[in-house]
Amino acid sequence: MMRNAMKPLLVSLLLTTAPFAALAQSTDAPATDVPATDAPATEAPAADAPATDAPAAAPADGAAADATPRVGQPYVREEFGDWALRCLKAEAGNPDPCQLYQLLEDADGNAVAEFSTFPLPEGSEATAGATIVVPLETLLTQQLRLTVDGGTPKVYPFTFCNAAGCVARVGFTAEEVAQLKRGNKAVLRMVPATAPDQEVLLSMSLSGFTAGFDSVNKQ
Image (tube, rainbow, N blue to C red; front, side):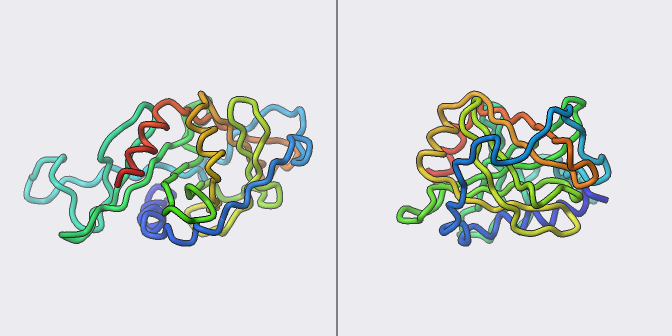
């Protein structure tokens, strides 16, 4: 099932931040550069929708559900508005790698996509890296379009797909990060392969983004 398939992908994504240093590949493409129609937004196929990690099963010895996570186990350290600081428990003596995360849902509350972001080291071409996971059967040639507060859309290509979904690994410039911090809402747009004349629009709240991103940066 998708829920189980997502877990190893999300764990691996927490561990692979280095490739983002040279990925500031967004384009200032107006909406007309990415073909869109007046057809109403449609839901992505439910079977292919990424879902958040299933809650960890209770330990056999009856330990409390909020016990300290084990090495290699993802956990939520803190919440900032509509964002969660998701971390991966590292070996003793090493800092836990963390990313700022939000699950994107459609109007019916179905989980459709996942958005994770984190700062990159100073001197990198991009200021922040981001991982966006969407359902399989997304039309890859249409790429992803991200719009903040109705501004100029940014278009990002997909990097790869596997059993868990299709992934776009992109880099944000300092100005793009500043735009996200100033913004109230972003809209992620994708096109389903089974209905290329339609589009899926997902709302991404930016409430808490500034505090959450700065918290990751301090690490």
